[in-house]
Image (cartoon, rainbow, N blue to C red):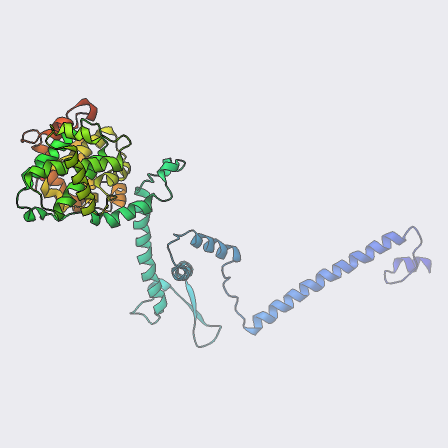
Amino acid sequence: MRRSKENNPGSIAAPNDGQRMGGAKMVKDMEQNQRRALSSINQNIIGASLHHSGVVNKRELPGKDEICNKKSALEQRSDTRSLAVERVSNQHHFLEEAKNQSELTVKPGGLDDFETVDVEQCGEGNDVTLPMFVKHTEAVLDETDEMDIEMEDMENSIIDIDCSDSKDPLAVVEYVDDIYAYYKKTEVSSCVSPNYMDRQFDINEKMRAILIDWLIEQVHYKFDLMEETLLLTINLIDRFLERCTVIRKKLQLVGMTAMLLACKYEEVSVPIVEDFVLISDKAYTRKDVLDMEKLMVNTLQFHMSVPTPYVFMRRFLKAAQSEKKLEFLSFFLIELCMVEYEMLKFQPSLLAAAAIYTAQCSLFRFKNWTKTSEWHTKYTEDQLLECSKLMVTYHQKAGSGKLKGVHRKYSSYKFGYAAKTEPALFLLDP
């Protein structure tokens, strides 16, 4: 009986202490085998039921990581894009994915019958057409992509001219763009009528040119004054002559007094009245100078702070990344223009930009106007050509005319022999 019980696997015998652990292990293994069998049976049953129920396995949608990657790529687009364009671009990305993988269109017959349609073949001539919002999306995105490419090219070609001065408090990098925007807006107040000489009965354009040429060579250069003083002096002369008629005997007095006022406004060490009396060979007295000074400030209503070509020259030369040679040649051309009455029709900013452009053409022997210069001057090359051609003609005849004060000044070592530079005659070619 004992042997039959041991051989019968179905008998339940109380195990002794030595067999208890082994029997428990065997029972656990049997339970695991039974569970595996049940799980496989369950899978077979579920698969069979799904197969007979007619359910079709669909293509997997893009995963969460893929969508997040697309979203992050969209966020790296240009900041100038609006939220609406970004939403449209999301639709465009999903449309591109559908083009690559193709879409499933379900026929009315049921879920079992389906057909694969290539999105690229959908069009006006086929049965399946793209929705209108998809076509609009593609058109908008094509436009914005072209704009982005143009803006990126423009931004990449423009140099940040203020980055090296970020730590210089005198450069006022935070406000410099606003300052020059204000200069550009108010420069009209410093302009005069290009035909104001018609109202003068005793002086003419030639007398004005002689006066300015004398001031440049005999007064400004000998007193070693700053460049901004000279340009402000000429501006005061023209604005005063536009409002008051002057006899020719007083014209030199007007020029001297204008320079005295400009020195008080710009210079640290101001020449005294007696210095101007001596330099005029005592043609006028101290009282004459002071009386004319009162008349000028009252006529101009003490409006001295006007943007002259000098303020624009400094900014535009920085944009052109100029050296001393280009700087001297540019100021040489500006002073030639100051003598000529004809150049009053151009605004100060245009004169400054054209002088730098003409000087670059003279030095490099080809047309050179960078995107950086165009961005900061707000003038294109075509807008500068008219003024630049006149400057070339003045440069060409500077050493041969009667008024050679500017040419002699810039033929010295102090100004880098700028007057001896060959003019850019190729700009005059049609």
